[in-house]
Amino acid sequence: MSGISLATAARRLTGTMATHPLLIPESRRLKIIAAVALLVIGSGVGTYLVVDRVASLPDGTALSIGDKMVTEEQFQQRVKLLETLYGVQPPTSPVKADRFRRDTAKAVALSELLVDLAQENGIVIADKAASDQLGTMVNEQYNGDRSMFRRQLSARGISERQVIDEIKRQKASARLFATITKRAKTATAADAREYYERHKNDMRSPERREIVNIVTSYRGQAEQVAQQARSGVNFGKLAQRYSIDGSTRSHGGRLGMVSADQLASGYAKVAFESSPYSVFGPVKTPHGWNIGTVVKVQKASLLPFSRVKDTLMAKLTNDAKMRLWSGWLTQRLREAEIEYAPRYQPSNPDAAPGAPSGR
Image: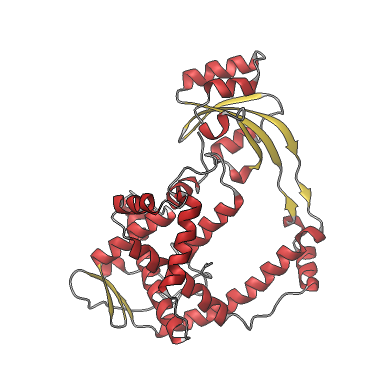
């Protein structure tokens, strides 16, 4: 099997396999991106401010927000929660692990600050609202089996209460964002047209290809399968016989129409350079050795304004909201009494992140 960069996150987010190991449905992919963006791991935007903060925190404390202390143990629990819900994996290299710890400390501090700011603006999320959303998630991802969901959490050292509290933080932050940005200018069709004309080179539908793929565990077997395919044996039948990808094997290895950015980069490069109906591979990915063939090509093309108008209006409206949000939140961060222990101090503690996501 192959995988895109968010595939692992998708599996951990749902507790199940993604729909396809080479590709995640767009709706789920956007949900994962939004969830991780909420926690602003390495996603600061806005003007970076240089501050001189010397933490004077008790031993065993990672950070504080006003009178609220976050111990190192509590911090590690939040990291586990990130991994469980969003598939955020701490890096293994010392340099990247250090940056991850500092960025995550800022994310934790910001999430706590946003909850406080939400309360100041009269926003309080009831347990029932969060529990109802959790119930929907369990129904969608665990077929309503709450006990299975709890076992999954328990295996990771996470409680259902922690998940509910995380949902409440998400929803509170999302409502706060909506409150602060409600006066942002709503973009018009004329605004969208002007943007379209200035960015026509970007208004293109990427090339898409319909690909049939076979995954094997070993290179030698992949080479043998590729040889059979090149000699004229039906590719779909080979997939049904040899592929270890359970999500596509019964469909003859068909991935459907995909763009390059939906595939693992190494696999995408080979697949999008191959001539239609030729057999390419074996291509090594983290999940196995892949042999593929392209059965249809849809060339890149300029998107008509009518097709992108609504998307551009939404983008321009959101850009206006983001400018308001970034300025407002930067000021709140300047005013906040946030301290970090030295090993948790982020490089840009006062930079405002992007908009939170909520349902």
